[in-house]
Image: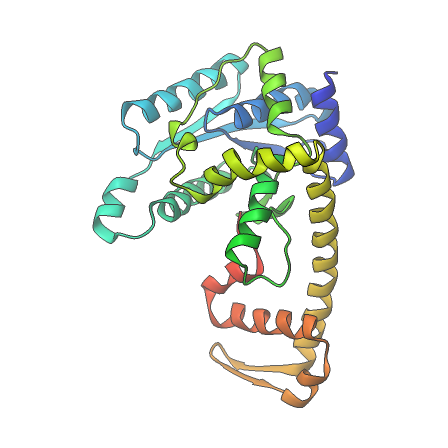
Length: 296
């Protein structure tokens, strides 16, 4: 087994990200990360008795180039004998009609299609190729912008989605490791030129700040991963305590009517106060779930 796949497998087993017989839907843009994820799970298919599918969306923002991305991914699926699910999303028309943030609209449309495929085809898990460098960027962005979340928990390893869950088995590997593996497999991939532009904060951090951090510590991705995993474990524990306190302190009368014991609320630790308030907001506003979870 190639060392790259072995490393990912150990991470999968450590966090029990998949079980034997799982039906996995692999989100593939055609870029190196998601293509490597496809190759990895194709290699692990027999070991875990997996059933695989590949899903791709064309946001129609780069014309013929994005259409070529879909063709590339579909051909990859055919070559590997994996079921392919692809669609063209009406992002430009929605942006024109509604305005708003293009990236947010792309995400909403993309996840809506993922949800549809998950349910229609009975997939258990949606697999993304987010990696250790993405985690570094996410943590730095949260620090720079400030965050309304209770703690700095970064990209979650797994979270509920649709009729199953999202898993990110590549959070243990770096971009360089991914590129080395794809090169070893002699596998082509697509490049999105928008990733090179400094228009977006994440790109600026990727091309300027992260290389500086790596100069200071070549193992910075491992350090950040360990930090985030501890933060996530601590946050899970505190969220459990906060839910218990919420049930004790808050009486729900209706969807928009709540009563809280303010005297007892002031007596609990501030860390729990913050989380109780966020749980209350989640009940009041559907959109406030973003406060409790990065929704990545």
